Structures are given as C-alpha cells and as structure tokens.
Image 1 (spheres, one colour):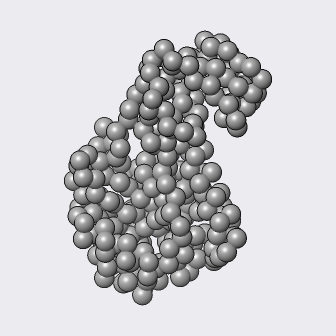
Image 2 (image 1 turned 90 degrees about the vertical axis):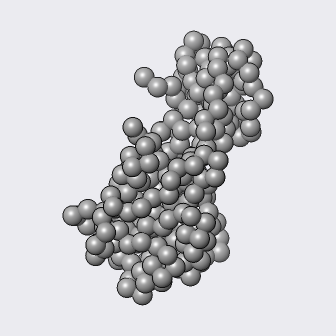
Amino acid sequence: MSAPVFLADTSLAAHTPGSTYVLDGAEGRHAAVVQRKRVGERVDVVDGVGDRLVCVVAATEGSQVRLTVEDVVKEPAPDVVVTLVQALAKGDRDEMAVEAAVETGADAVLPWQAERSVVVWRGDRAARSRARWVATVRAAVKQARRAWVPPVGDAVTTAQLAARVRDVVAAGGAALVLHEEATTPIAAATLPAPDAADPRQLLVVVGPEGGIGEAELRTLTDAGALAVLLGPHVLRTSTAGPVAIALLSERLGRWS
C-alpha cells in the first residue's frame, strides 16, 4: 500500500536522509488528529515542485508529527506539460473535472470563461472560485500521491485562449479541442515529442454543458488548435477532460 502524502508549504530540497521534518499546521493536524498516525508508520511529504521526503513517524505531539527522513527523491518535471483548459460549469462539475484530471495526470489547469458557460467569474467571486479550484488541485495531488502540484491560472476569455493557443503552437506545442462533431479521433492527433530539456505544451480544451459554439470553435482552430473526437459517446463536461487526459497520458508513455 502506498504511503499517504502531505504537502509542505516550503521547499524540501535541503533535507537529507536521517534528518528530521516536523509536520505541523493543517497538514500536521490532519496526520495526527484525523488519520491518527502512529510511530513507525510510513508517510511522504512533498513540496509541489518535485521534492519528496520518504519518512517514518518518530513521534506525535498534539497537532504536530515529527518525522525521520529515510530517503529524498527528486521527481522530474513533466517532459510534456499537459494543461486542462476547463470551461466554467454550473454546480460543481468543473471542480469535479479538475479533481479527476489532476488525478489522471494534468500538469496545469486553466479556467475558461466560454461563451456558453452559465457560471461567470467576476470580482470577488472569481477569487473565491479560483481558490476552490486550487484547493481541489491540492486534494487531488494528495490522493494521487503526486510530488508536483499543477498551477491554476486565472480565468481566460475565448480571445485570450486563442492567443494562448497561437503561442503554444508557434513554440512547437499542440492544442486539442474536444468536440463531438470532430472527425479526427484523439488517438490520431499529433502530440508534442517528450523533451525533458525543453518541454512543449499540450492544451486539452473542454467546453461547458452547452458545448462549444461554431464561431468559438472556429476562433480556436484558426489559432492553430485541432478539434478531436474523444469517442462514440457524448460525455459530460465533468467527465470528458479526465478521460482525455488519461488517454493522452497513456500515449505519452506515462502509464507504461
């Protein structure tokens, strides 16, 4: 059974095997009070930028857990940066999409204020909503035992997204727009070649409940995006992105 993961607020790069790490704050309370960690149990601590401390519990003191570092692992950054571009959706369907997409391999998340999005992020609501997405990403990272925390960007309009697509494609990356009327299957789409020294971007664009309008799709494809068909069935906005990320993770060799 894999060890549970806890998130540090600071870099872990300076730690070495044999050193002590004190898990405190919200993560310490969760480990000590909620999960009731005991001496000798294995836990991992990650800093969100690839550093992982492989630890065992040495002692618990209230809401703090003192850990002995047994190993330090530096996990490489992605050699292709897969970004979920998720349209804002009503209810919690967009957050559900973000959660599952991070668990299946998304390296970054970009909220998209699509033309047919019922939900609108403005002012204080935008800040609160983005904060929920950030919290969702962190929880998904811990669930999936990941060492990297995907960043969450600020919400973009279709025009801003098109500009991002142009930049990504011009730099050798790719942008795939999931669309039920596309004729190119996602399995046939050309992906950026993995390159650890110079990672390319791969955008995966998912529309809202009402779908992506023709003009909106044309704006994105004119910018260099490719419309792709995910499969024979029409999926919810909360499902399409995670399924696409899983298929692309397999194609990129992450799951082999």
